Length: 156
Figure 1 (cartoon, helix red, strand yellow):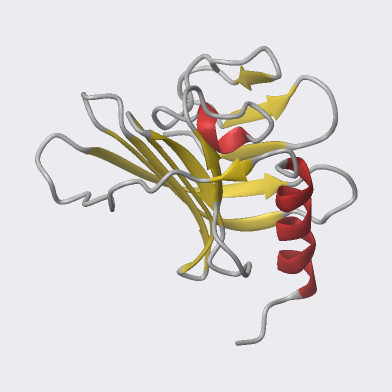
Figure 2 (cartoon, rainbow, N blue to C red):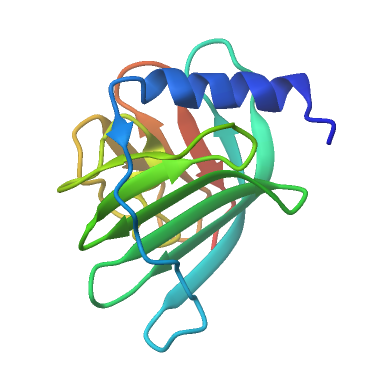
């Protein structure tokens, strides 16, 4: 598989941001066809931290009334980032990266934007590291309060 340089740089930024993470707990596979899931999809642009180039792709955000969440950012149908929250813990990783995903128990890390999504467009983030910018009917943006990382998408 030929992965573009920009995708490799974005993944390197993701891994660097999670370097303090630990091995992910084993989470049950997510079945979005299971009753109760609310699934939203949108085109999105991710600007990773630092000097990595922006990546245009598709964002899928799924939430369940029991608190589970699943977020996937893909480029040309290839998952780039997959983040999951469940009662047993959280995990984040990439099928493009060797090794297991990062993760932990309790609250997910607030170092990356993916755990701030509960819906599309994003609502108020859980962490003060992130802010949601936009008004109803206009493009949305979730951006870091420090640094240049953001995820943005078109008006719903």
